[in-house]
Image 1 (cartoon, rainbow, N blue to C red):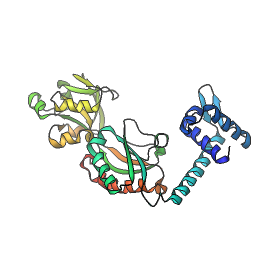
Image 2: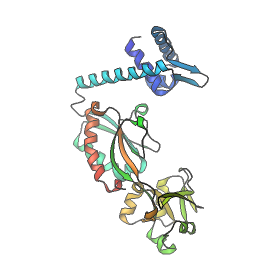
Image 3: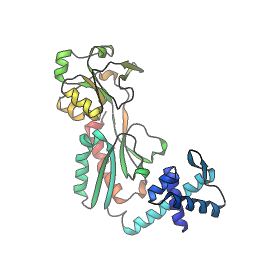
Image 4: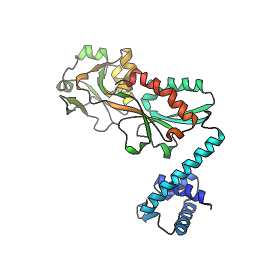
Length: 300
């Protein structure tokens, strides 16, 4: 096997974190990947992978070699893309990942406008709940909410969102409007089972964190269901501002206790290649960033 293919195989194992996962990325058998790595270690005269009962990890030499492989493979991909004109002409498939309720509330109309402007691009829009893995999941651009680790790649800020407690006007007319955190305990609250500690809502009071433990009358499996229940007058729901943007804007829901809202969370677009990105990625970012920054759902 040639050295380029060896680097591809080792890079896949290093990114995926195991021989089997690396094999799946390349559509090879695990046995083939094991043979390639073993031959590579023999040729280089050093141990690249540390093998143990729980799988493999990179040795110090393996870490250095993986970084070099990645640089070489990216440089080669850039050269091939440039030769094919991919950096000058936006075309091909673009995979974009966004939070579930951001897709409906904010992103879809902007994405459709982009497709109309660049007809040779095919857009694959997928949703995520957990932070996406760009390289492993084949994602070109992702919109994420919250603070990012240093290893997330390139990032462009597009706005911010805040936690919000909301209820329907009909519910508030029947039960009154809470004006203090302690008043929440007298209200019917809607929890979300998918959210950690869903029966405990966290706020900011006089610059200090404060938690309010509640006994939910209704627990939903998703934030979307909780927002829907709130619009039907079933109680108070807590979500991020963008998740109920349309309902708040239309008056189906009203925001409560805004003086106690927690700190705003940044909204960012993350991507991988920076200035070396293909034209479809760069044109997409140029197109959507100003539109997202102007969107009222991302003004916190």
